[in-house]
Image (cartoon, rainbow, N blue to C red; front, side):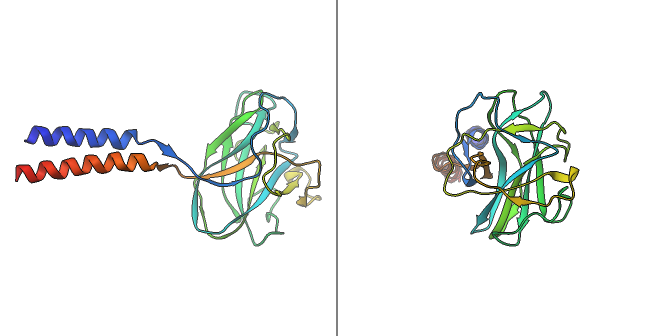
Length: 216
């Protein structure tokens, strides 16, 4: 009987390690358009692009990303940051993203031709407004930065913002106009086990409980 218990415990450990994971979308500005391109709008030390989004329930982010390419590979060309806003018309408090409203940032390594890429970033968000901002030259990203293709079909009416970053302190953050849009930016939750995986784990636990009862 002890051997059967050991086998069951090993099986449970395997199930826990093999649970398929999924993540829910917190926000996405557009669906993915054509990939493998080399054109779009600069995302570098001289141009930060962002989009505002609202959270209505507490949630923890798992990753951020979008449709990008690296202007001068190799190396992480782009950073992504989540910034807390006071409302739907607010902007980040700083051009260099050094103020306390910046909740977290991550480096995104994009290929030479455009693709959907992401980086892990775990931030706890409470209900309210936020900005998802991408650029270059900060948080370890290259000054040359990358490119955001603008041929992605928008979802709803994304609220775009931009700045010229810390290289031009005389120009504040501003609202982007039509024609400078259709970028794909997204925020996902932490991965969670899928329902089928929970069922497998429950079966394993039930088997372990049965083995314990038989031994007793």
